[in-house]
Image 1: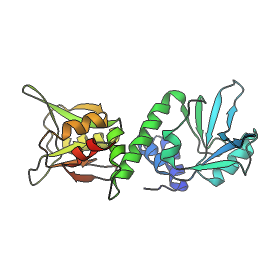
Image 2: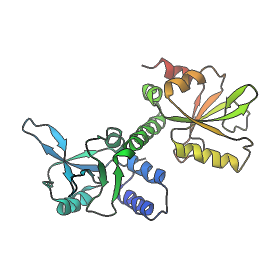
Image 3: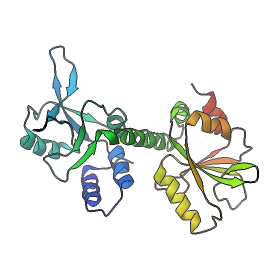
Image 4: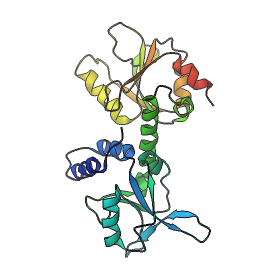
Length: 251
């Protein structure tokens, strides 16, 4: 999904008004492909982000959702930000590589609605970017198996059984053994809510697990299939069980 700037700014305001929760906004931020970042070009031709400081010498990284917001923000912020010197980014690329060089990431500063993220929140932003990248490749005819293998933040739901724990399976009317795997916490929560309203009869135990461990385990479980994000909000994707072995064989 490629979000447009108008929808993203509506979501920003909704989050500020507490009408939606953080994950709904973060998904739109990562899926938006029209980000505009002010840059400066040094004598060697290198292009670097412009960081600005407030009166307390706190460094801000300026992120704008679109050209209109960029130009409006530049007029307010000043600080050498020009109409010509900017770089455009896809959301997943911008946030996956978000630098720790600034204490605050300021979205649309000077062009409300504005949202600010502290440096302590950057790891979560990076993880969301990686998760949406994985969801995007899962939606293609030939997913990037290496990306699936090296993604480090899948979620699973376990249930306690006699002698240990078992992976929770996705519902299937044909009684097939289909693993339920989630790329983000909100997709796992949607599944638990969905199942709680139906047939879940155990105390769920949730875990985050890196791809190399996950698929190594999945390939040995005698599965019939693998379901990603069974209950949304990311698109549900179903694969045959041999996907696990194929992922483990990827570099």
